Amino acid sequence: MSTDPRQSWWRTFEARLLLGALLLRLLYLSTILTNPYFTHPVTDEALYDLWGQTIAAGDVFIKDYPYYDSPLHAFYLGLLYWIFGHSFLIVRLVQIAFGTLNVLILYRIAQRLFEPTTAQVAGILAGAYAPFLYYEGLLLKESFALFLMDWALLLILGALERRTWLAFWSAGVVVGLEALSRVNALALIPACLIAAWMTKDGRRSWTTRLAPLALVLGAIMAIAPATIRNWLVSGDFVPITVSGGQVLYTANNPANTTGDLMPVPFVRATSAFERIDFHRRAETETGRRMSPAQVSAHWREKSLAFALEHPGTMARMVAHRVAAFWNREERPDNHSIEQFQQFSWLLRLPLPGYWLIAPLALLGLFLLRNRWRELSVLYILLGVYLLSLLPFWVTSRYRLPIVGVLVLFAAAGMTHLTRLVRTNRRAACKPAAGLAAIAVICWWPMTSPQDTGLERNLAYAYEQNGRFDDAIAIYERLKKIERNPENDLYLANALGLANRTDEALAILDRLSAPQQPADLRQRAFNFRGDLARHNKQWEEAEQAYRAALLIDPGDYGAWNNLAIVLINEKRFSDAEAALTESIRLAPEDALARTNLDALHRYLRQQSGAR
Image 1 (spheres, helix red, strand yellow):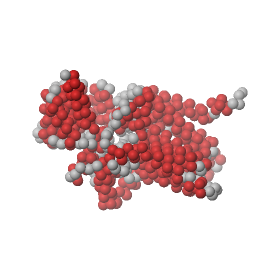
Image 2: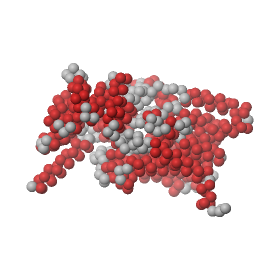
Image 3: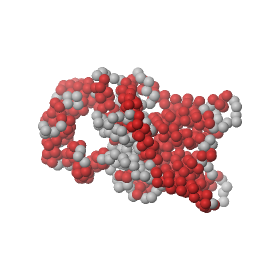
Image 4: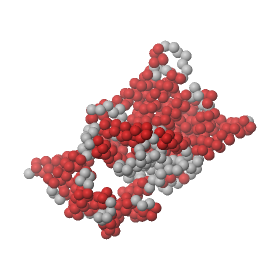
């Protein structure tokens, strides 16, 4: 038999682990090919998909505005679209490749820190962890953020051993990329410096002692392009995104005292409108035009004022978030793993999940306490990341990047307890009882807000797939369980798309009647305009949009839609005036500006043709 290590590797546990992880991910991918979301992303997925397409085409997504959402994922998608075309399958295959590589990274980290058995357990848990598979099948940024987090951890461990400037700089670059994906990861920079300071080093040279500062340099270099771009378009210092104040206010305001994610009353529950709605409301409250940075500061100040005025409420909310972090529930945001179980039999299998990782990780945290200085990087990263979530809210996708660290602690807890059971059952009683108590705490049912928006997202995906009957069935079911006029509006839209126009108009007539609230009537007229526009009934569409504008002349979206109708009616000067009004009302919205530019190009072409 050959002793060539390049050949013998294929017979190692590591090779079998990688092959198993890859095959499991490909199998999961095969189960979601017919999922209605697969080719029709919604909410944040749709936003990043559009942003990525724009980048691939060489255009600017939102001009003259700092990044509102974390930019790295958009450029990642844009690169893939530029190379392979607009392929959702390719994106998921690449994410599967990164997910498989992440399993290897966690296995290698465990090999550095623990004995071989624990490393193998960590690899198996990471390879079969159901939420990892689930997020690798979405167009969200979480799976790539997880990969960057664990890669950064591996590089930091290597840097702490070598203590060279290059090693720390490399780790800093990856930490900076992680921050470009999840802004709260900026907290990892001081966390890594603390870990470097706490790790013993027998070398005394100043060069070695100051080497960890290269980590800061690497992170700054990675983040700098976003910071420079933000300064060039706005004149304000915005390191990565300008949405920090808005996110903080969403989590802490008089309408949200639960500690969970709750909708802000004046913000439409769609990522495409969130930025604009916050901006317009801030200017309405202050009575002046505001820059994006001023808008963010406005909402940050309001959030902090709320926290100072209600310290007891804030303490209760923070405690709730800590409990949610350790709770087994996969709290949804944009998508739900429970909903995806409808489409994938693999997710319905008893694969390792947070229900297993959380209690075992807490056990491992306790059992490894005597090695805390040696494992300080793990303890500090976990603690700092948890603290970075507490001002906001905790969902499955937000805690995902740190789950790799939890997998390491869980593997250590499992192997330690198993070894005690085999060698000294009496000594194993206390940790086993502790694990049982921890499991009860982690598995304790928590109250969470009902999110019927996930069902509406699914209905919308069905509409995009042309499965109108499935969408209509969801809206009709939602009407029975909640009194929310949005369900009627969306039902009317689905009926219209299904060519059941009379039924759709009957609903919209009822919702736009004079006795209905003004905001509901206004939305009903907009939906009626959309339906008429879909059927190319331009005169009816114009009447509907103008009726909506009579109720709310500040509806910049209605002005934009009216302009589209006027263009189809060949009334170009009126359309130009409508688009100009839309831009005046919401200069931070790019859609009307894009449409106006297209109209001007068309008119120039027509003029040149003459």
